[in-house]
Length: 334
Image (cartoon, rainbow, N blue to C red):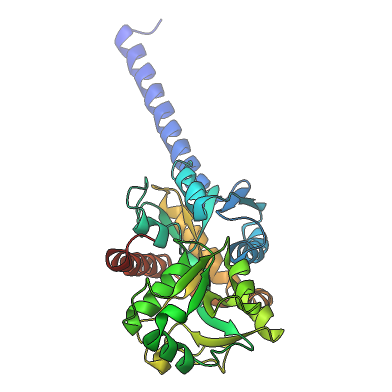
């Protein structure tokens, strides 16, 4: 029989070995969890109904991500209040990288600037990066009285009360793009008559039907109507020519240097998402941005592939929010 002291030493040594093995195993398990992400299916929330600009682009990107992640990636459409309903709910999602939301301007920028009491801020979420851009384009009826950017500017400055315009949401990107136009021209925003619809599509159709003089819509929404000869593009937002509308003057070419309102397609995760998830998404987006097939498909719906890092997209969201907040301060919440 071993002396008590000798037995205690052996028990202590055994416990130390067991603890060491347990810690090592836990460490390896943690490392394995990070390197294995994603280990199950990912849900991407689109905060709008199916078939729109964000939904169409997100579905194309998700198809490419399935191959990259080697896991199912599904879309969940959750519409309501211009994206605010889904975004508010998303705030409380588990930050494990398996519930993601498409990040676009609107619920995290314009709507937030107009409604500062919302339960989140522009920087409440973990930005994962972006994959494509699509500017706003100001369009007019193909056979309307406004035939060019110069015509539009002349009418807005000379007789704004005779001009009508449409938007797909009172606090959405189309409205704020138009307010930015009025601000750049020094036009009283209450003078032109606004007609509000439910979505960019109906707003663009109102232009095609000659019911309003102009609208600032997504390029993806406008392209089919432009190709059909029903509407004419007047101005593309931004500082560089847009490859899908090479003949349309950019804003800076007609004296609207601050009219830079590109739409982006990106992704975000809930607050406090681990860095390894961000890195996995950044790597995946970088790889699929090189895919010519995805690039071609995005072009077909009016989007141009552009890899946007998480930090770059965070900066873009901040600038858009600041621009929107300044417009709210000047023209009211809409």
